[in-house]
Length: 299
Image (tube, rainbow, N blue to C red; front, side, top):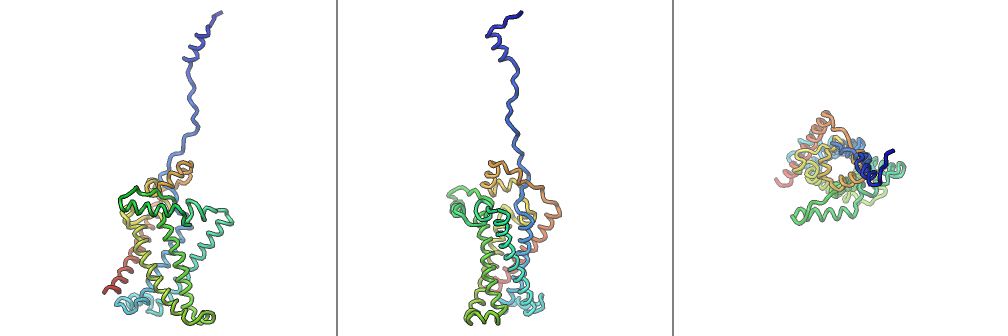
């Protein structure tokens, strides 16, 4: 019988192989692409883009009827009368799309319980963080501070969003007064028609200038995305772009362990091609219409 001292037993325990430490499951690798816009949002953007371009193309000949190019542009729609009819069709379609969107937001929030649409990182509602980001961006422009880390939506994207809503409401209300003057005259005083005519033209000019200059630059023509940002057409973006452009959202998803669940397959070649075609047509028409406005105003 072999006697083992306490010291020998302790030495044997130290020399015994140690089981590997169970660290738990390894974190999921970051996806190559993430989903940014669902099909509903992409189709809504296509409808609004198409109707807005149609409204601009048919409304500008009426607004600048004395310009040299107005009659030529109106002739594409059968003359000024035809341009007016097509303008009303596009206006009704845009108003319908915005009304549908507002109804869809409330349905998702109150029926499906997506209350994050009204507040939080995925909401289009302006929040205190947007004010901080705005002043942080001004400091960055001036070289006085670092570039802010943005969330899912930036302050300028929220401004674009609300500009469409309030612009459509304002132009739509004025347009309906001008479209149905007899019915409107039963409840409105005569001076309201002069105001409606002014508001409709002024708001339309402001919207065209903003969309075709500011929105186009922020969305497509800035150096990081020139000449086209296809995310609104394909619905996905590379995770490296998310890390760079929306660092706060990337950090939040990474810390919550939900980045992998936001992953998406790389867009198919056909989707990329469609995005390029649709986007190029929109950019070309928009920049061309801005050129016509400048020609009418300056020359």
